[in-house]
View 1: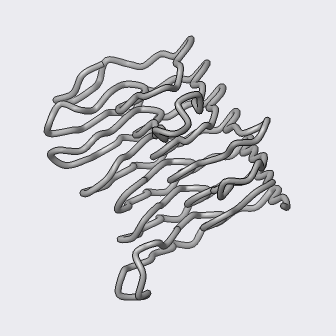
View 2: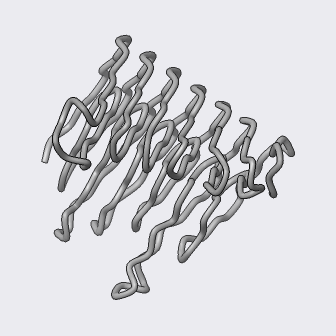
Length: 212
């Protein structure tokens, strides 16, 4: 485990599949990939994050507990840069997975544009697995192409068939960013919801070709 505190990135970061021979690459303004016990707080990203591989996030590409119990807390972080990705794309995190007692994004904000042509996009997180989002705000526009899903806070709420009790909680969150989805799958808070709960969340009615 470890911690990252008070860091700022102002440079553009990009990963293309031609850079590597594998599809599992992670791109983030502060960290590409973290595992087990991690705390990221008071960090900011102003650079553009561009990836043609697995996950991309303004602050972190992927956090993965890898089957072990590990805590992950991302707090008081902000993204202002564009995030363009392939599979899971989010203003704060691309893909977030944890089975610890504390696994949350809290008091974070995204103001950058989030885009994907092939995956799931969320103003705060592209994909959640047993993760909480609390007191967060998205003001960036979210753009996906036909057949895909975009959410003002979360793109995809993932659930393992063998672990039906795993779920996250989205609470006290707000989205004012435009949701642009050609296939009407864009939603104000969470695009694809499985087990996670949503409470006390709000969004402006600016879903372009989408649903609330």
